[in-house]
Amino acid sequence: MHQLNTLATPNIQFPLRLSHDLSNRLNQTAKSTRIPKTTLGRIAIQTLLDEIEEKGITTVLQGVSE
Image (tube, rainbow, N blue to C red; front, top):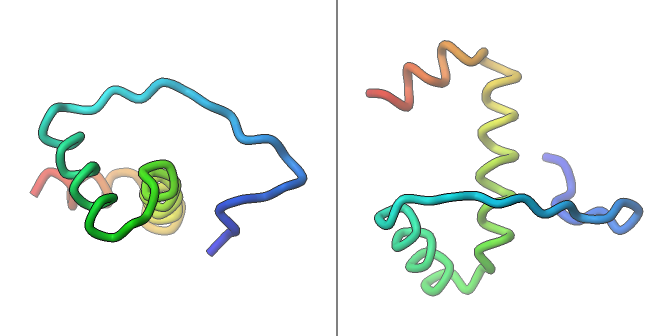
C-alpha cells in the first residue's frame, strides 16, 4: 500500500458531498476509531482505486451494487 502522507508533495483539497447517512457513518467511525476523517477518506479512496486498477471498474461496480 502506498504511503498516505508524502511530505514531498502538498496535499490537494477538493469538495466532497456525502449523503446524510454516509456522513453520519463517517463521523461515527472516526469517533470510535479515533482516526481523523481525512485519513479515513484517504484510505477509502486509495483502497477503491487500487481495487479498480486490479479488478477493473465493471467488476468493482458490480460488487458495490449488490
